[in-house]
Length: 634
Image 1 (cartoon, rainbow, N blue to C red):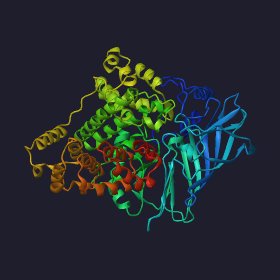
Image 2: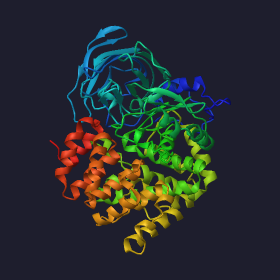
Image 3: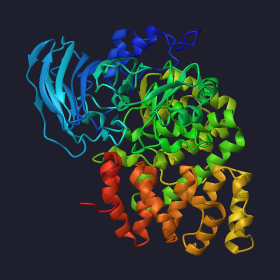
Image 4: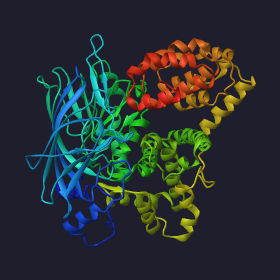
């Protein structure tokens, strides 16, 4: 069924149907000629896979729409609000269960009348279930609550000098429950509208229709008509400005970064058009970007309509826009078709990396995309080796996260092993056929969830129905087997190969440091050279590189990170002050983990702990959770 209007806008009727379905891993067959009745759709929607990371019981009662009224208190570091949900119930429903984590629940009403409620025992990282008694005819449940000042999803960035305070959320994977009581499962979708009050002088933004100018009284209203899972619920508040960079694209950033951001991401519309050309009409109306404080723990977060992004991707030369391509691709793989549980995380990220590479190829050429793929392959091999030593099962695409924090599954396996699996299928059946299949997949399961087992069934009955293709791909080995299968596609980048040859010559002493083509290299080549330096590279040789090319002063944070990691392993101390400043200012976990680990592995734990002690208060909980364990921080 074609889910798109000829006008290129999503049909309001289809959005309403998707809201009713709630995005569960239903049993609808994409090739059915007769659409199921509304009642059949509701029944199918109740039959979703079990999410072991949520207390919700959607087969009994589940949310379909949220009306949220909230006040943001920067002094108390709390969000006080009332979350009113439209709900859908089974015929024998007796209760509805929400996920909460360290929320103070003040009162609950059911269809406008005060109601009893109960909170279950707290469980590590899952929080506590909030159970509200209901009957089958109940339509609305309202919960008045206050968040904890230390809520894990929230980072309160203090005002400094003339810089205003800033708040942002990070809800993925299961942190939405720390700032709003919700059914916090990726298989449960809901639309929402909101009224939010923030201090005067700040602008509030959400993963929804957003303001373009500051409201003097600090009151803002939002609407998200398309149904989303809770991990895509997002909020930010700060002194930001708005700048158009295309017909459907804009950037938000603090005043001192708005000009740089508008230039850096000036090609967003071009990326969006390339994505639509590949896999169908963009379903979210606008694609805007918010530059967050550097403490943001990720490169980007694909919140619908408003990607959250780290300022570390502002390089001044648009060299790091692959991250924007990645978050944009999530508008199809993840936001539109969503992993039903966190064990199925690769269905979000593997598809997104594949889509990202195709966008980059379409806009910047095959040479650029293959350089990126080569770097991804190197990182994947390293990650497979490291994880295999600890738990080989964690190198499966289908994860096994029962009793564990789903954050444990956010590794290169889901991203890059998933990408190479999809690339293998493309190379097996041919690009034209694969593209048609993938576009149909996004259309058939729009606003629904997908689990690995149903995906395998769908794959076997569609793209890989031919037994010869199926045998060539070896689905079981990729999805349920460890490591990288030996039919992994080969990547080839002549430019990266030249970098490797140059590095070999330099390390052998047959190429002088001032003869390196450093100034002719682009970011990917510089990163490859630095990241492949031998661990036993001496401090003297690092000093040669620094003197010749001033690498430690680069404005490209990916290159700077690779340089600093090698500086630690080479004990090149002149870079240490810059690294300390970087680690105090930047909270991106991708950078933090390797740098602190390098200090730990080179017997420089005193330095690691000293820097971490200064920096920890400015990191998001996502980052401190990882660093605390790495550094045995008490």
